[in-house]
Length: 163
Image: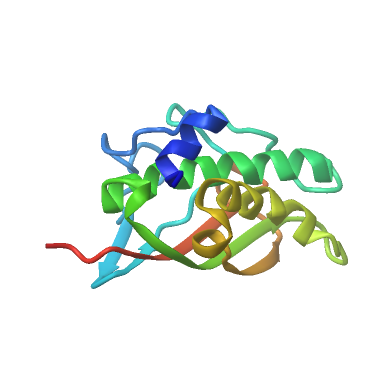
């Protein structure tokens, strides 16, 4: 049986290490995740690497194409995998993804939010498979996100119990 960690290797994903420190450099002090039993609530992540370089900043359908927004959402999901590792030790400890709140910066009336959000949830399905990686999702249009990022993902998941 192929595990999520095996799939990451097969896909050649470069997952960032969030253990040093996960936040604080640009956004101030905040909690990277919160655990209640087996439920893990992750803080929001963006298509921004550890040194602050952003992928496709701006407004989707104005500065950023839907395809570029999809790529930004996909990169955000890769970053989220790093935060999951911080929270539960290994992607193999994920029992199920629960909820994905996807924020897409776009103008009023933009209706293709789901086409951008698919970048994140498609990647999660590739890594975790249908049973664990299928997630309830909301795609929400936003007028702005921190540092002009075009996408942000808030993810909730169930993990194996701690000892």
